[in-house]
Amino acid sequence: YNLSLWLGREHRYQDALAVAEQGLSCCLHYGRFDLFSLLLCNKGFALLLSGQPAAGKQALKQALFSQQMLGQRSWLALSQSDIIATFGEAVWNEVRPADSP
Image (cartoon, rainbow, N blue to C red; front, side, top):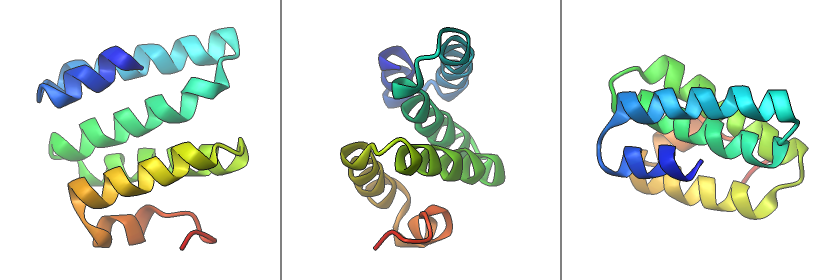
């Protein structure tokens, strides 16, 4: 998770995407679902920032749904603020869970 986050912050979106994908596979293999939604968020950000809006928004929707289902309220709130700060309210309104403010 941390490496994909750092790579994204360094604008190395393809590398961030590759690391996030590898992390997602590891989460599934080892049952580490606490990190799964965070890696999906990193994947969504990397896709959106590398010019793949449809795939990026789909990954963000999956991340937010996972956070909601796993009861990760603090991560959901942080994801919301990061999405709004990076992409604006319009993207948040497209990807937010149905019962989010």
